[in-house]
Image 1 (tube, helix red, strand yellow):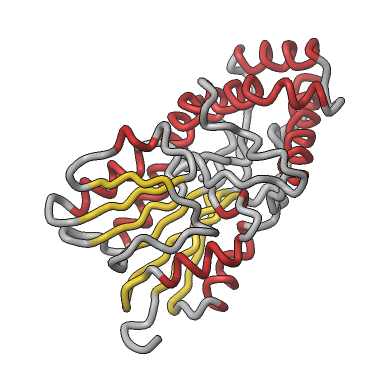
Image 2: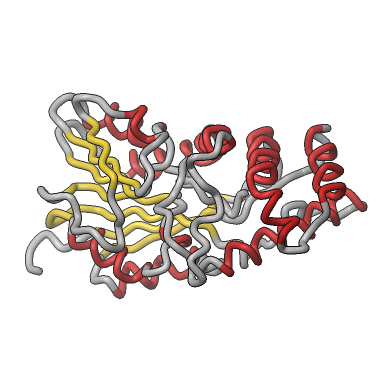
Length: 290
């Protein structure tokens, strides 16, 4: 989810959305890209995480003429940023199961394709950079998706994965100083329960360095970003809760009155709302050999 993607930051996200799997019980992805709130979420995720993503992309040496695969793009911001870096002689292939928002990035440089990273063959041609943000945490067959992304790399190409780890920091309000914060944290815990019931791995981010090494990549490194308060976090929380309020009520996690009260607290701008840590990990495919 570059979204992917309250967040426990689904988006790509990114900013962003995600590849959208069916959950174990066939309930589907919790944050549907077809809902109007999805665009608000993608914008907030872009504001929060695009600087992090492009700090890594620029450090990795993306330059003119290179080919990129943006997996589970969700919104248009990351494909557009990649296109600006590879220029007219480069290529960005932007994929998602639902391209409702990503198609805004389509251009002579950016090709937007409907694609399931865990089921469909990788786009042809080989890539200098493959990137996914807030995607794999939501994909049921994460191992197969990762295998296909590594397969798509050119020799010497880089895979950059960015995913949340709500287990490392589970609170929406780390400073739980009053009843407003306690309510916010209870709703966030309920949201995580809904995500887990649909196959999300809430401890996935911390595993990325090991998984990249096990996939045969070299020079693996990682870091994490953890905003504690930001206007974008406030926008993201309000849009997410409005998007899933029906599911929260149906699951008995909160009443409509509690959700309205929480949204009122959020709208004041006085809650310090955090996100789960976004773990960014990257590794390089060998320049020769398999």
